[in-house]
Image 1: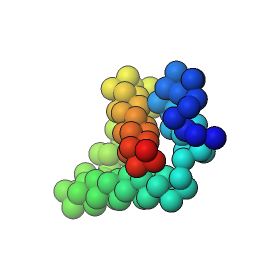
Image 2: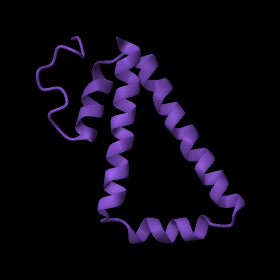
Image 3: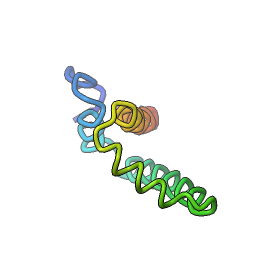
Image 4: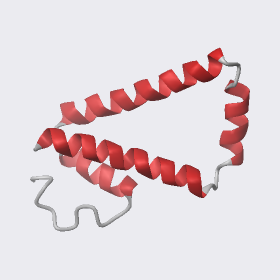
Length: 90
């Protein structure tokens, strides 16, 4: 299956699009992009810890379980992952 031939591509949510693309894209590219994203998270966590903000981060995470801005940011991350994967599979 070619990930670029699906008429339904990019019709769903950013999350569902990511999982759809990830299933049919080159596995090495998907793994590399996920590793890059985890590295970004690790750097962000390290920065928070160095500034003594890890407790505040946990409080904010619990308080923003339902938060439009956070949901939009998560969607943006899924869109970024899809874009990175698709451009490397072309």
